[in-house]
Length: 497
Image 1 (cartoon, rainbow, N blue to C red):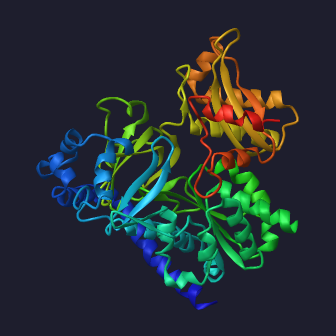
Image 2 (tube, rainbow, N blue to C red; image 1 turned 120 degrees about the vertical axis):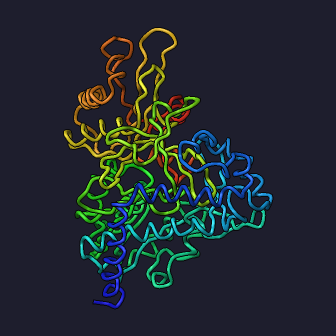
């Protein structure tokens, strides 16, 4: 056993013990975080605008601080970009994380001296929990992919600015640096396909033991390796034992990924965002991700159906229920207050507080009043695919609204790894599954208002070609599962079979 893996186990048990202890104090920790946030926030411009010095409890906070998305927060961000101090948090942020929003264009999210540990330590804790539970430390001695955006940073208002993954790359501990791939120079490459080819070249002959990235990226990487060698990933990397993923639901990609690997290995899910690292998988046995309740973020939960109301219900952790769909609101020591990150979550346990991500607030279909969400379409497709022995590469769904004759329907664009023997039967199964998941959709079908869904097969690599055409191939870019309009669907027309 090498020194790194030898030392990893006692350190993992030490951290894991603290995480287990925090499970029992989650509600109290959240209340303390709110008090600490208010203590610092009251001296800021935002605090003075929102009476933070007068606030002591969550109920008062709800009355004083409205829920905002990035666009509504932008005037404060613009002042920070001009170099103004004490706007949302004390002083200036140490970084601005630059991210492409789906509706807001480029967003600039502050990261403070106090909040950077949330981003760094949570990723570490996910791995340490795995070590503590499994006893596997050998992967720490091999090569690991920590894929990031370019670590090169620009300065805006005197503040280093860049992609979150590039910022985090600067904080990889020195003891992991020599294990890290790809190289700094490769991570700086902007063109995704050039970067991917370089990653393949740098890793193909290495002892890769851990690979991290969003599932579509991991699959593209595996595909390129298999095309080049004709071998499964486990044949190339016999010691590959840990896949770290996040950003999108893993389930639609699971079967194909493990088939490409050629063996079942540990998969660790994370829930990171530029606004904060929300949750992570702390156990290979338990369902869901452990909410990060003691890491500088005070969470609020709005019943998803109320998120667009003028005065929605805002629950703190002690009031959430298992099985309810909530919009996730954060208040953080980076200076985000009542901030709507756009994700919806559902608790699968409140002892401890574990959740699953169910979708995006703005990614739904309700063109006919059905309000179908991401979790429902993903589970409906996965169930049918398992029954039919079908592997899905990628998919998205949009409404087809018929203006003239004929009834409207949901149109599914699906890229199959292997097509169903009978596409009509497969579509019918998916439709039945969705009707069971969503009563409103079922009522529209049974009421003869909507036709059952239609499937449009997309040609091989069609989604990759589409993402390339809009300049969003690779990295952390994802295809939205659902749209309430035809923008993506219309663009995909040229890629259907």
